[in-house]
Length: 322
Image 1 (cartoon, rainbow, N blue to C red):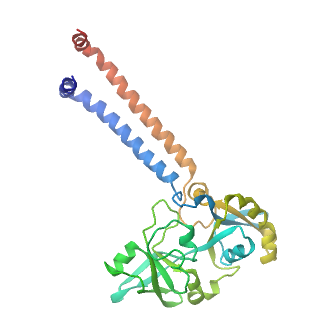
Image 2: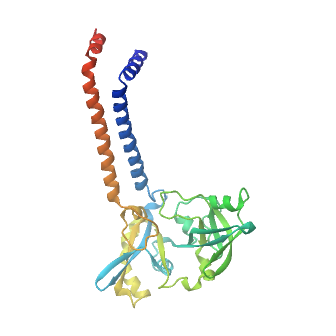
Image 3: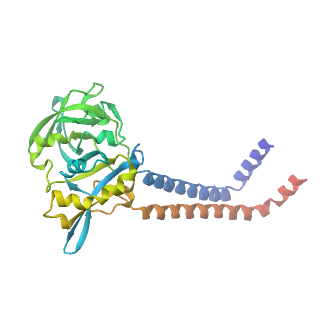
């Protein structure tokens, strides 16, 4: 019977070409559009959820009040992570993320102007689940003038050779410095708000930009922390009030700190100086509704056409019943 059903279906499609094209094309377009929207929604909702300790990872954000107007910033001062680590035992790891750019010079005088360069602390690969193909998460960024590169960069400069122990030169605004490669990381996933191709050790700032190392003014950097347990979050926030009184009393009344879960940065962040382009959960709701609406319309259209066509197949139905 299955063979017969397929034969009859094929005959009907060929006999009624216009009807078949309209009906099948309409349903196919509806399903395709709904599927593409669904993939977009899934991608947006998956941002920064691949980290193993994601429930204990937070970005520290800061507000500044001027003329009675409070403005929240995603960036903070470079001295903040070390001070937080010293003051709060509930913080297991801290790291800066300081984006920069510059000229990278490799073997054979290969030169590339690169944008995806960040400075980060030794805790960076311990906190975040960015996989290291070569190197230890605890050791790769502990020394000054060391760096981790991604697999794509390793292939670009060294091909099939092992890049560990070799050097790349970084030419910034204040000179050229040789960095030893201590690790190779897999390319960061697209659903991460932290993107990089080069990770320079934060201790390198003592050499490359000493005036920016652990200061309470310039430059704005991004501070991430990992708590020992998620239950300590409220205790930590309760201590923020006296924290600034101790470290920057001259501005304590104007500044405040808060914690933002890393999984909320992409869709629920509306701060100044974001590290990367963010989205809005409203768009996820809107596109989800549009995708569902298109799918329902496509199904209704298919059923209406099939129902209208069924009247012309009454003889076939009678023959089958007989």
